[in-house]
Image (cartoon, rainbow, N blue to C red; front, side, top):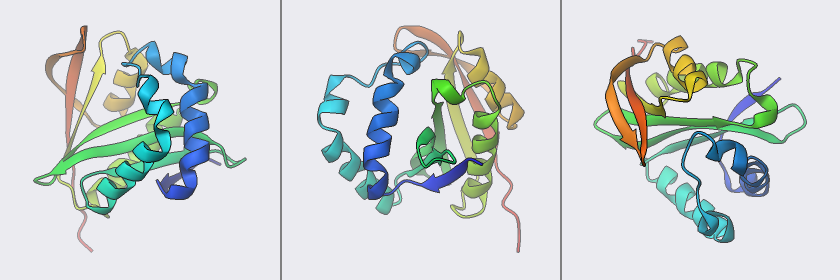
Length: 164
């Protein structure tokens, strides 16, 4: 069973392996992270953990039954009760509902544990799978955007904070 875990320093080696193994796969639909991301990974990882500790972001990894990272689901730019959702699933785990399930878990955490009231997300128009994940998780279209040089769409979701 796959497990959603909050990102820690201990995830660094597995996260770098995940990002490296899936770099070309991700670059098909989203901007490449660039060579500096990989060359300076330890420093970058420490920096995002510090930002997470400051409450600016909530980073998560999806861990497979063998302990390898199969995805990421992040909430970034936390402010005024809102954040932007971003996610990526390994090519080897894609197409099996994993993104939909993990995004659902993060949405629940966002409303409950993190106290957020709304999320936004973006995807390119040619990434139908990502748009489907968002729709399955209650996101609605907000309007067209441009991601780099590619046409895209912005989505929004209001979160219900459960009492109790």
